[in-house]
Image (cartoon, rainbow, N blue to C red; front, top):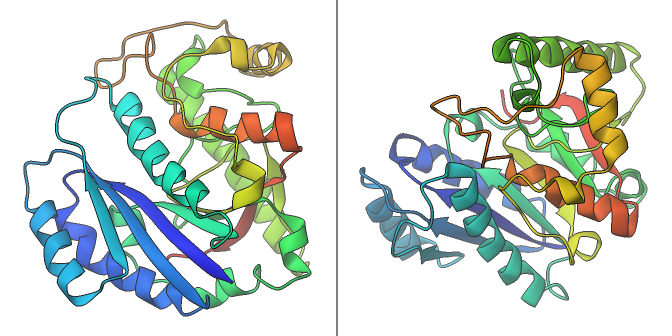
Length: 277
């Protein structure tokens, strides 16, 4: 089985060397692999690091976004991830799975390839269409997470933004801890959306999905919003938080996963195990 490793890079210089080494380690789980990176304009030497690495590893191909696509970070991320996605879909007969990952400190830690390997067996691959992993010391990516009853974004409901974050973080950590303590082999947690910096996908299940970093409520099932409102005890809001403009920005992963659930009944799963430690 072949795999395409995908991701975006912007000001990631301190972490690139370790992340690329971890990709090399994980690539041994596959018959062949390729790395596709979309580089956004940076103020550090990320581009030079990528060029130097490409000289020693021809498996790396990268695209350069020549200008600032949008002032909104989630719009830029969606644009870049969709370039990766389009590349994979053009080669879907070659790559039955692809990995989308961040090239920052999260994936620059030590990696345990055996954690991923156990989910690549024929039987275990039936358990998931998208698979992400827990992280240490806590599950951190609450921005991309949708899990019943917290079905949407913690940024878009009244009450304190940070209170919402920690409430959902405590909830997902408790679920994953309980699952791990059950000591049931290959047990996974079903959700609506999850990324946590690294996820592997079955290409054919996501062939009609796209990343979207905009607020697009027409594509969000109304029951998701109602359920989240009730769970949070608040109302839906569109706020500009300064570092994030909730009037225009939404996590690019959510609609990507929701569209695959709608169209292909995709199984979006989280492993209670940590791939990076």
